[in-house]
Length: 166
Image (tube, rainbow, N blue to C red):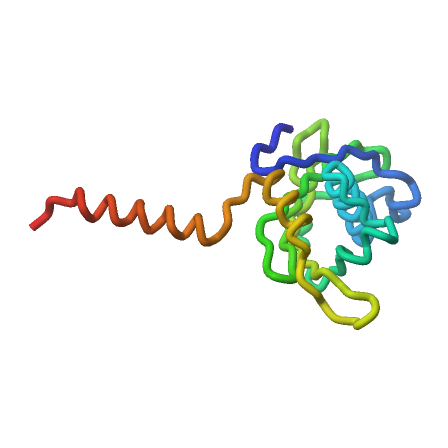
């Protein structure tokens, strides 16, 4: 499937160890699928989440997760895990994910994830470094919220100037 809402896709096969006795992927396995896709997402951006030095400035911890299961993945199915960063706060990253069955294109799962940049020394969240923020924004074609709000205001202003109603 070409899902144009997402710029990242990671293809994988459901393995026996990820399934229950009926050969259906155990619900907790979907977290692993998402985690692998997220690791590959950041690897493609040259951000290595496992690298000890990089974790000194950027180390994500999931604080909120919402998964909606739509259809089962079964042993030996090939699945596509799509992931996108949709928003960045000062300390947080919001991501959207979807999992599809590669052959049938059936939607398997919708998910929303919020993570924070975690400081292991203080045990608290910390700001996302500008270097990381800029890499993600470039990849996702994100405009800064100030620029986006400015463009929206310009658009509204143009419409109201061209509105000839009495």
